[in-house]
Image (cartoon, rainbow, N blue to C red):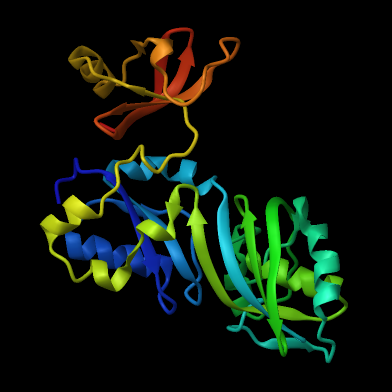
Length: 302
């Protein structure tokens, strides 16, 4: 693939493969020079995995910061070392909460909350990943992090399991939420099924299954499945650059003057510098700060 080609893939990752293995298979199949993903999904989770191609990888932080939606199934009465079905059982309880008990407490988790990540996570402890320390069977504790839960719904319950749907912000751990909901109800619990259904503008309607993608040819891949880099960035200040001189100056990392009246999305507050994305024919070519009419690039993607 031409390394100048850029954009996003909206991949549906199946259970049983890591996020890293997913992007490695795509990179190898289509000969992509640089590739990356936004928001890791555990191997035993499925759902949307946004993937950036070539210079679009510089935009990953802006997608990772977007809200995400998940559906998950919680199994009551059992706590594991990993807060999912992969871990060893550490606590058990005979208490299975009823629907009324569940609905009474779940809204306590809405808004900004302090959340302790699972011990099987990439959180660092003195420079080491928590999951590596856990594998070494050493005792350790993790500090809580401030995270955001926008919504939570109890969908249904059956026997010793309950299904939920949530919308959350960056850095949120569904496994931690399941563990904490159970603790709030004076029992134990862990996630046995997890599905991510939305990441910002990445939705299930436009996904392609990983296996289906790997079966197609190069030309079909480039024509049908690569979304423009600007199409997946939500609620941004954007400006279409058309002048050849401006495009040339940007490619050299130079500042350019722009017409603020042509900004896409929302008006600027002229009292402060704001992050602006410059596009050309649907793809982001730079992002940086706008001071008055002067755009100063932070990153150039051409």
